[in-house]
Image (cartoon, rainbow, N blue to C red; front, side, top):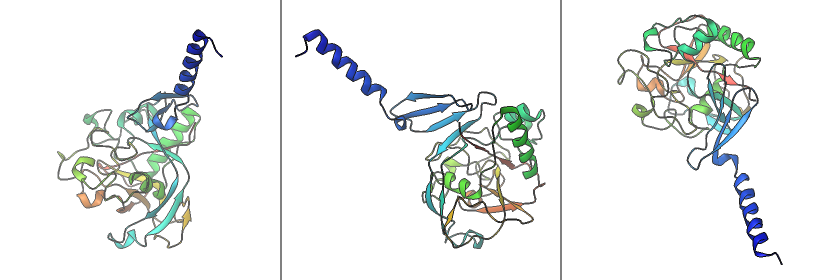
Amino acid sequence: MLKPNYLIIAIAVLAAGCAFAEPASLGTRVSDGAGKTDIASTAVSRVTVSKNPVTGMEFVFVPGGCFRMGSDNGNNDEKPVHEVCLSDFFIGKYEVTQGQWRMVMGDNPSRFSSCGDDCPVEQVGWNDAQEFISALNSMTGKKYYLPTEAEWEFACRSGGRDEIYCGGNDVASLAWYDKNVALRTHPVGQKQPNGLGIHDMSGNVWEWVQDWSGDYSEKRQQDPSGPVSSSTRVRRGGSWHYGAKQSRSTWRSSGYPDDRALDIGFRIMYPGP
């Protein structure tokens, strides 16, 4: 039998071991974007975030899964509803900001430059977004990229939930759109996040995705990348310039790769540590 003082020590060691064994899902897993990860335990936050120390960009981990993409109640191009299964990925917690664009590209194309560094960059085409990503990859040694349309909708809908907007059914709490803005963009992160902790996927600025535009297929798909070619690229999420219906989670829009407007921006994907 252990002596009393040894028994106390044994209990203390066991308690410490249990504390260190707390699942990472009970905390916020923070990565610096270069392979180093810290675990910050909290009973409240369950979001997994990767942060790049060079740009300050934050990326939310999205566990893979299957969902029914599209809507039977939407426009014709939102049909047919079809099953899509996706692998795990990291997506930007916020839209790419003016400050981040300037840090990587050395300029700021935004019409609303007076809005500040925390406002989304706009006046950027799909090709411009690709140039930013290429420069960022050279700067960091990583392989950032635009989300596919399927990844974007899955993340928008908090992991494939049945949500009208990106995070729920109350557009005013989730999005900057034409009824609640002063005809301009707003700093990212001011509206409520969706169920994964991602902000502004509805409203603020349209977001380019990787895919060429085209019709949906009825077939079940695994990690789809869209049509092989087309004349236009997809953008999603609506903007401050459009109504609530364009901010719906399944609404689809498209434009030529060189199209630029004061309500078009993007967010990017992180390849993981």
